[in-house]
Image 1 (cartoon, helix red, strand yellow):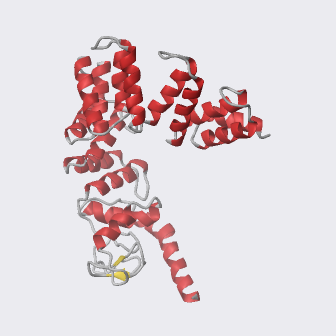
Image 2 (cartoon, helix red, strand yellow):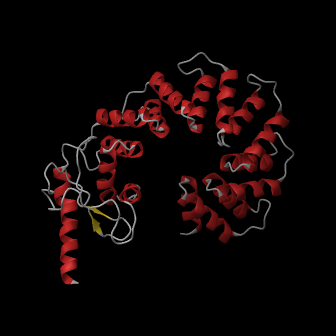
Image 3 (cartoon, rainbow, N blue to C red):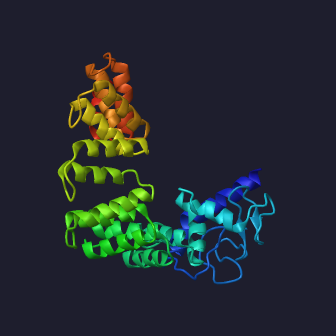
Length: 333
């Protein structure tokens, strides 16, 4: 048992002390990587941990293997590596991400690109990151185009470039990505880098809805509220918000909560408003959690209950609502 502990400790020290320096030049598609410790391998044995270059460790049972199937549990190498690469712990995921990216797997080309973007396990290199994102996208992986579009759109680690952003979103949309369709629609709605066209915006929003994005129904609803490209129709807008909410849009549930609580576009109905807020809160919407906390604190449609108020403010704070954190601290000095 003590020997196993020493071996595990030694491997951990390799991971945190040796590997980062060994990876200073980064990992590019086509290079080999040790699936035991994550270092580059250009020889029959890993120069860092001594494992044969064919060796891999099963993500489930930790058995070392050299063939394509785990001797311990029967899991395939491919399946094991895919699960390991998705592990949120970077040191655990790194060898699998590097290996699968080197084999041209688009999902892990995207992951490896984010490592270069953020300087995780490799030297930060935005050009290399963009090259990897593009490789993943050109392999037909829509999330890579979407991710790159957001970088250009928001000026994240690159200069803002609306034309490049739209091009990336369009490529994602062409691959059937619902969010890509929504972003293209938003460009036509706002006229960002393209001639403003409400009909085209509506077409793309509807494409997103048809691909399962309930939130895009809210964008269509806003067109009916404002009369953009369609005749203004408040009732139609509210119907679309309810359709979005019933299809699982937490944002739509939250907005309906606001409409009914305030009597905006609908007859005021506090009970119905709180019901929609509860549904939105169940779907993780922090603003609705905060609204429920406020309702219990002030007795808005419910009996005043500071314990319940504190509970909802706490949930909202943990979901990232800054005002909720301040109120919770006031109720819990």
